Structures are given as structure tokens and as C-alpha cells.
Amino acid sequence: MATTRTIQAWGRLQRPEHTLCDLSDRHRPWPHLVGDADLAQRTWLPFGNGRSYGDSNLNPDGGLLLTRHLDRFIDFDPSTGRLRCEAGVLLSDILRLVVPQGWFLPVTPGTQFVTVGGAIANDVHGKNHHVAGSFGNHVSQLELVRSDGSVRVCSPQQHADWFAATIGGLGLTGVITWAEMQLKRVANPFMDSETIRFHSVDEFFEISAQSECDHEYTVSWIDCAFTGRRLGRGLFNRANHAPAVCNPQWLPADLPSGVVEHTRSVPFTPPVSLINTLSLKAFNTLYFNRQRGDVQRGLQHFRPFFYPLDALLQWNRIYGPRGFYQYQCAIPPDDALRVTKQLLQVIAASGMGSFLAVLKQFGSVPSRGLLSFPMPGTTLALDFPNQGPALHKLFAALDQIVLAHGGRLYPAKDGRMSAAMFQAGYPAWRDFLPFVDPRLSSGLWRRVMETS
Picture 1 (cartoon, rainbow, N blue to C red):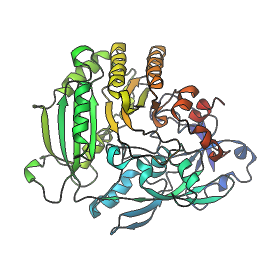
Picture 2: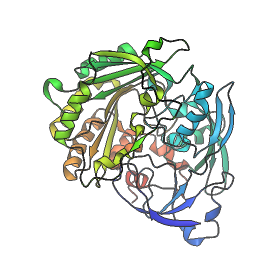
Picture 3: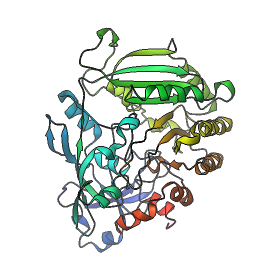
Picture 4: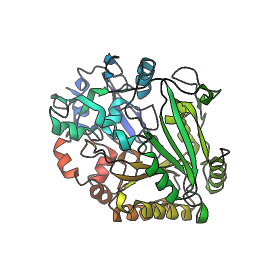
């Protein structure tokens, strides 16, 4: 049964109307389209939990195949950490099952509320990219169902070309019905973490280089609000999973009980964005000075370390009714320090930006996907309230810098990348074209292929 309603992505930039079809049987993911002439003429797109920011998960004037009801665990071996589940299972569901049994996700993005299918389609990355690569590096096999009814079990050994196209393939190669992955062993749910205050981009690069050998997870919050001597200051966070025996004095008194902690929610959308130049500078100053010393170490539950924003449900509402953009780029390593400084200078001078600004080093572990975003070098991600033409002028300036230095933008976070920018950043796009299911499309794909 198909229904029609408006659907927003996480950035809440647009509310296009879609025809919706709910998938609940992995053995028959396309049956509702057979025999219905109107539905058969539409383009479709698999849709998980809607956490992509722009329009990579939207298909305006087309249809969405809702996969959240493909939410069953198929097999889990607690002795080996091999897990097989349907594509609509959330990462939070996996954590709830496996952490008490001594296992953890091999790679996780900054939210647990994404589906396995979405994590594969966007080949998501995490704080441990320098040692573990991206999500697709830990998928051993998956099942792909095409609109013509053909079924392929894909892996690095079987249908390897389809596997490479589907990892990071933006949901365009077919419907992923299930996937199998290898989890990683942990002794407990705690993280041995250290936060270091740094005062310049140069210092960030120095700490990163020192941290990569001894710390599995590294990431930094960076202040994008100020120029001059405060340009590029921030907080560097590095961590490892806590060992089985650790110092109990490091345990904070307010550790959440269990795997899932209680969360709060932004109850409504304010009439205007709560993020502006004045509030941004005030918040960033308070946040930068939140710890007493330059170094703070301790144990913390994995949840606030990996998923700090998940503690506030519907946090995207704080940007007001016009929504927000995220700009995430990756810069090759050769001139990354100078280019990162240049990007931050342009952003700070514009007076726009967000306290949700992240700077991290990618490692050299190659991604398996033809269109995977991670590349060796540096990645910078910032949220921007939607301020119309002024913001797009800033984006154009940032694009020029990224493009001139061989960088790329992240499709999962994008809502406005040009075809030229995409095709320059993803030179394998032509190799990807033969794998696109003719019945599948998205707003982003039509834009970057200039077919809309």
C-alpha cells in the first residue's frame, strides 16, 4: 500500500512530497510495484532513518522505499563477533545487543540512529578511521535486490564489482536487504579518554601526529568563530576502549546506567535560528574554557564519547524553520595545514558558522567503495544556519579552495554541491554509472548528474 506525504532530511532544508512504500519482507522488497502502472513509472530510493543531511536520501516527486521495518537480527555468534542483520536495523539496536556480550561496532559515525543499510550506502566513517577505515571495510557480505528482481549476494570475493559500487553507492545500486559484518572485541562499555586544549591549527596537527600510534580514536572540536590569535583553537579528544582492569578513580560519578541513557528532546522549532554570530562566539568561548587545565583524562561511558548529540533528540530544530547545511570536506595531506587554515579564515571572516565544528585526520586505509568519501588527509565539518545567498557565497569560496587542492565534499551531508564539484571529487563516477538501478534516483544524484 503506497501513501503520499512530505519528507524532510535531517537538515530540514526542504519538504518535498514523496510516494512512500513500506518494506517489511526482505524476501520480497519490490512486490508492491508489480502490476501498478503509476508506481511502476516512478523512480524510487531506499530510505532508512533519515539522518542524511541534504538530499542524498530524498527523491522529490518520486518514491521512497522505507526500510526501517527490515529490522530483524538474522544471526550473531558471540564467540566470533560475526553479525548478520537486516538493513533497517539501527546501530543503537546492535549496541544494545552486543555491548553486554563484549563486542562493539568496528566503525561508528557520530550518531547511533542510522540504519545498517544507510551506513553502507554512505560508507560512514568514525573517529578511528586512521586505524580501521570506514564502515564498508568491515562488511563481509550483503544482499542486493534490483528492481528487475535479480538478487546478488555481494562480497569482496563474490560479485566484487557490485560490492564496490554498493559500498558508498548512495542507495542507487538496489535495495540492500541484509548485511554481515565483523564486530570488535571490548572489555567493557567505557572509554579511556583524554581531552587536550590546543590554541592553533598547527598545534592540532602536532597532537594528531603524536596521537595516531597510541590512540584508536581521535577527533577535535574546533572554534570557527574567531580570527587572529584565536583562529583554529579547539579541544582535541583521543581515546581507547578501557581495559578489563582500570583505575576505578577515573570513573565519573554520573556514569549512565546500562547501554542506553535517557535523552531529552528539543520540543519545538523556534521561529528563528538560535545560532547566530553573537551566540556562537559566546558559546565557543565557554566551551573552549570548560575544563580547568589544558589536559583532562578519565573514563567515560561510550555513549557521551561517540554520540554526544544523541543526548538531545531533534537537535536539528535549533536552526529554526529554514533548516541548516553541513559543509564537510576532505583535503589531501600534502598541503592540509595551510588549506585548513585558509578554510577557517574564510569561515571566521564571514561571521557564519556553528559550534558543531569538527576537525579530524583521515588515515591511509583505502575505502572499498567507488564513491566512498574518506581519503588520506584532513576532514573539516561545520554546520551553518540557512542564511540564503550570503551563505551560498561562502560555500562558493570554500568550494574553490577545496577543488583547487584536490579535495571533495561528503554527499551524505550535502544539499547543494554542483555537478562539477562532485565529478571532480569522485573521478570514479563514470565507472559507477553501469551499476545504477534504472528505477532508483535521488535529488542529489539528479543534481550532480545534471539530469533534473
